Length: 64
Picture 1 (cartoon, rainbow, N blue to C red):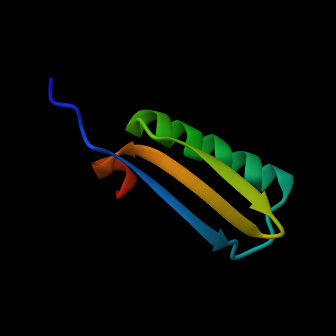
Picture 2 (picture 1 turned 30 degrees about the vertical axis):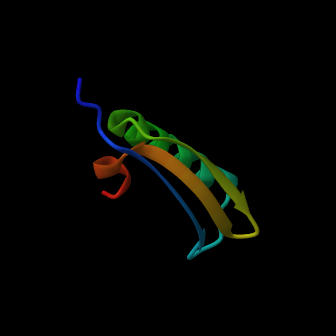
């Protein structure tokens, strides 16, 4: 069986605006739904307006 190539991508970024708890909850809910559809897994960190994320999945989905 031909499996898609899996890759991992890590990055950091800075929020363009102050993120309150509700905004962070919406962001994580939306990302979780999309990631599930695309077969992507990962972890997201947020502190002092900075995000850190590592995601893994099929190359085509991760690089989308």
